[in-house]
Length: 351
Image (cartoon, rainbow, N blue to C red; front, side, top):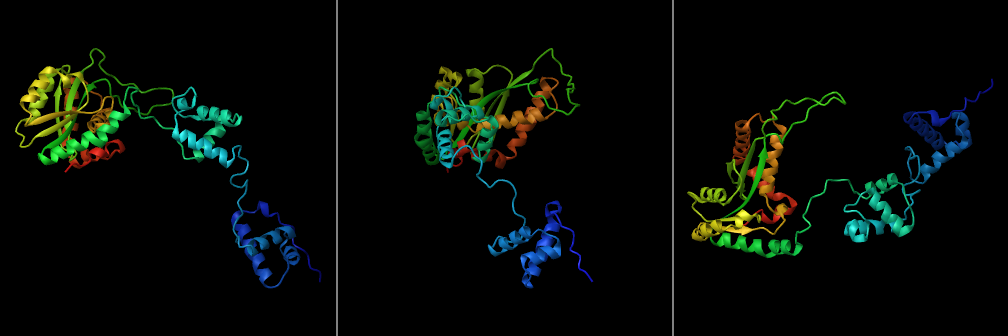
């Protein structure tokens, strides 16, 4: 009786589960004393394949699938030292500081920096791959005015505001941050699905654009005060808001504002001087809206308006604005979370 060898098996054509089962059979036969050649003959495998599987087990690499493709780190154009230099410089500097004609880092800017340093002109796709590996993502920038003075911002954070906090605590006063914003009836349009290339149609009255203006103030504890007005902001309107703000209050208020000319007007200064025991105005560094938590209230208001149905007339717009603001007045915990933004944490608590 003759023994017929099994047909040779191409393990590359087996699925992962079948290959794993075959490796386990090889290990059992090897444990029974069979050598690589005998096992290969019995199972229809190539002897080098059996030997490689047994070697991986001896070296503690297990019986699992070996990762295919290039090893991590091979085939890269930049050396680790070159990568480290690029990462260090793009983290510490903006492109214009390094003599490149760009304001922000993007693939082309990094590509030009690599070319300047190392003489290699990499494809943009490769540069994006490096940026992804380094944990960099393309993001919308935080806008800051060119006229902003970092020294004044630092003085506000380290000296001016801590002094306001100390005075407020000593006088049992309240700190409020205030701001103004305008709201247009045709400014906040929702989005909707439609077939590709066929934008949905939104019917709106184009004859007149309605506008409301808002003055608001919030505290670190989440209190919201506001006043809606239809005209432009002037000293009379602003004084009306201040009078409403201090009416029936049982403690003094430190009101922190930006540097709008109305806030520094003569009428305002004279009225505040007469009521210094009830209110004081304090001013943020110029061009520093990111230090004012009330900007977050304005942003949330406009985001909610954007998501709602379009305003058909001025009264409809006003009703929606009132509804949103009154809802926020009932959610002090939500408003107080505005102060947890990175640039606003300095003002979380003062008591």
